[in-house]
Length: 455
Image: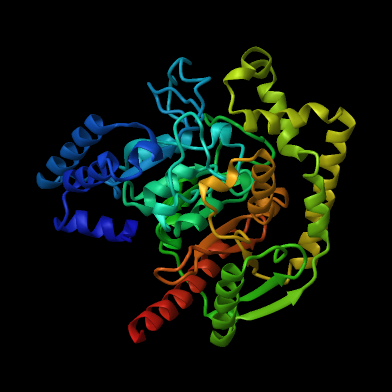
């Protein structure tokens, strides 16, 4: 998979033309045998080609262009783009007025030179970790595509688009794992920043307390670059500390429960490799994670805040929602004002407790999900949907509740079912998390390459 830095170098040297890059992405989107029709809700084919031609002409004439000019990027269907409708993966909003202006993060990507190739499909209103969408179809994970496995959600189309080279990267949101779960299920990298790090104006909300904006891409470095652009600062190379200087906590509470054999073996193999390389990894119980889990038992903060936003729409258009999404949102109706206040108080207390008990570590390390992507057929019954959705969300949502930055890295070998290794960094210490993740990515990539070369 090609990184953003490699594309910048190829475009700058003339080895690659923006029009050729955009045409190749559009060809993959349009391929009837591929997932483009399900990974994208809308495709900006004509405007993307026009912009690519303009970039190529400017470069050929010696004009200075933005660093990432000509690189195709996709946007989750939650972001306002001037002149486009933000439908949030729902039929309900498709007749809404077009946005009057770009969301700040969209404007920053545009100023950096990226070409918006289209709007990605997603779980309706971003409220599921599975990626199913009955309105626009469900894009499939690249793994064993004939088996029709789920892509993970809610940023489902973005992960599939990146994995299938339909875009160099995608912009997603993450409220309980919505960047990291699809990244894990599609074999790419997904990043969730500390929530306040990136502005959320012009983005359809799910939970204003837990929402964050992050990229899905092919490497840690790509995600770090995009994070800088989204923050409005100049991207800088993502350096990595010596692996022996990294201290990780592997919680033995909750996060390994219900883990399937392949995920367990792949995760432990990665942990062993990091330990042999010199990383300091401590296994320890962290019982506070059980308290975090318990706050979600009645829908928690996401349900309360989602219901407050959706209530008028539900009262008028309940029949137009995905029934499974509507059912989850309606859990918020069952929470009293006192219940919600207690949830906020519990969150504040648990953030402080976990920070105090983990402050000596660079990051927590755990599997992104305890299972590999299940087949779409596994969700025919509502009871199975509820059970599997809760299982897939369980580990990633801990980072959102605890207001931490987090990243998921692919750790499986070629041909194996995809598995993600997830890191939780300290709150507002996203730069250190990127450095740690880069060191781990380099260590594990080198080991995978060596294993492949020796058979």
